[in-house]
Image (cartoon, one colour):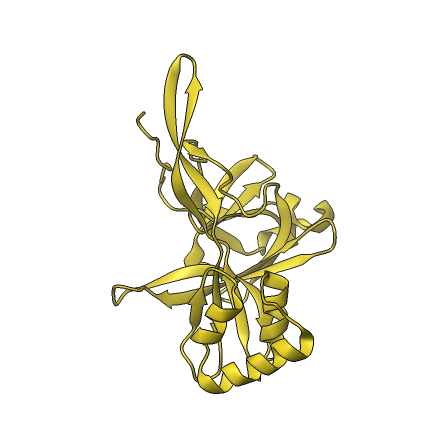
Length: 235
């Protein structure tokens, strides 16, 4: 089957309409001086099995741009497969892929009261001297900082029989990538939360401290919640 790729139209500059002001309020002057967003019309790729998005539904959130401007209560989805932030323009129901380079951070506000914060960081690539912009969710920011890239990756192929033919689809699955950053130490990057593996990656002084924290708080270190507890107590 020939795969259709994301259409990449010319980069466009979109001025937010008054309907995006909180609760639909505001006068013409307020609308005129609302910050613009830079992005391109987004077409959802369809040749995949599984979810491309970290959040399945559109979630209201705020975006802070690198120049300090902030936009509130925008309808957002984070695409973990392409590592892109998608905005739904509610006035036209058009989806827009926002230009990552201009975004400092964004939040998502869930109906249960939970708020997730994602930050753009610049990360050196493993096998080249190049750097890339990456969105990571902030899990802890104390002396130690803990981020996670909510990465969704292709892990095999799923075949589906439709209209008398077999079609192959990339099978997408969540594969989080954690980054633990200690003072004066390169980032520690890992995918699986495992006590033995994490202790092995830590520098000697931090390893002793982590072992003491694990004993004191009885942390088997098997899930994200326990990892956040450990990171929050490292000094």
